[in-house]
Image (cartoon, rainbow, N blue to C red; front, side, top):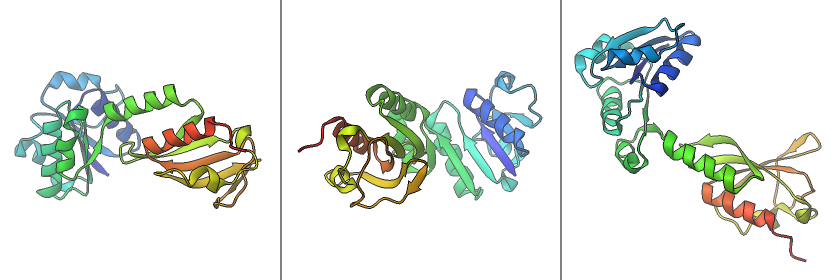
Length: 220
């Protein structure tokens, strides 16, 4: 497949190399030719010096034949405009834009783009690890807005039902329950056992409420 990476900073250079290693045709674009020094020595894709907003640069990068484009510069505004141009004017099938500043996230969302906000997501993950050591995130969707977590059932909830645990909560839904190496599709009436691994789909607020609930002793 043919991919264009606009912005050859740390993220762009790493992404370009990963795609190249997978056998894809990659063009890395940056206005500063020294940025290409960040590329891995094994990278054999194309590099193109120029402004990512320039029509001539995008044309030379092969945007009309591109299967995907990622705008990953350190400017959210530039990423939004480049990604919007690629999708709306060149009909690139898959377009992704990086969100660098969480305060400007709305700029990219206004374009209806697929965005990756590494700063926002990273800060949230560190907070989760610091505040909730009992939980583990196993899948993230929508920039970390909804994630699948794995939580271990403590002794205090042994014998109680899944419904008792989750029904009072919002934004937290069961996905699977693993016990003694076997996985089940859980229902509200399933009785929990100490050591069960419960996977739930949840927002950040939902998993916080679940973790707090698991930390409390079950009521008599």
